[in-house]
Length: 430
Image (tube, rainbow, N blue to C red):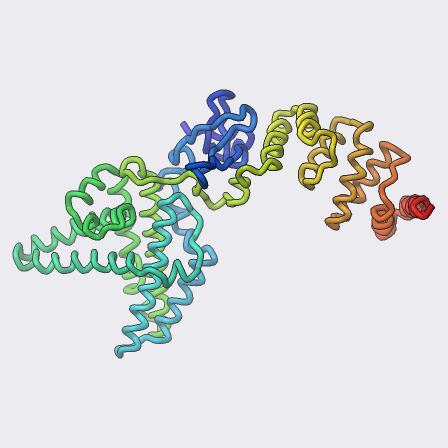
């Protein structure tokens, strides 16, 4: 049964704390650099217990691929693959022809398309469900994976010729069917081993298909439909269009279904990675709704650790505990982190701590004025003034707030703030 984050019930949990028996999403854990011989590796901690949490596994995060099919079809419509599909299709249409230019254009278009498709497969298999970047490394550098894929297709084509020659029509057809069934397994092996020899080894790709089980046959069924769809569209619809438009749309549809197929194969690797022995680094896991900076705060940053603990206490409804945690860590000194300062101010406001809110309000108001958070600065000033009629920030902050109050039509409050700022300046001159 899938576990969901205690504090974000709609998000699948990535980790579980055995001590407090709490399931947590990436936002609800701390990531710390292990250091030493493990430099660069992260240790994920429970903010409540300050103990390592346990990874729940990919199966708790993702749905089986057969439940995700509509999202596979939407995947290439993200801005990066969509721009690439349109650009490659336009090149194919504009440079079509029987000569050498048309051939070179076709090779370039499909070389880049398969290079990006391989990047999609590799990225998805590693746990990154967002689309790859459109950069030189993804599109132009290291065409070895593309060359190896071409070698797989050439090996199959060569064997088809041998089978038709040696075994006749029936034997050749049977071999084509078997090659179609096991082609995804060959590509998956190419990704997981990066070895062409292993990818075309019958013992290995047959064993891989058996390990995945009936899910593999279901994937082959969908890949076969995706592979045949462009030809079906071309035969019944696209062929009646003008030649250039025909080439453009056929190339577009073919690349579109190629991207879907490779994303599907990568997802199958991800889903069955334990069965096929493929390592997935959960630190790199990212789905469509996960932002890298949101999922993993900077390791070994004390401010992030304190914020995580404070957020945890707030989520548990322990506002007094959150205030005590902040005061304990800061030791009565001014808070320099804007987010922590905002948390502390809000907590004091919620708990009605009027004796503390005035002192902290001076520092927090200065921060808001420096960051040009005008609306928040006005709210903080008026609330602190309500709690303490003698609340008097520094002259610069008062002048800024007076101008903001005047601009919003609060002339009485603006005049009061201006008068206070003048008195403050007069005191400074003396």
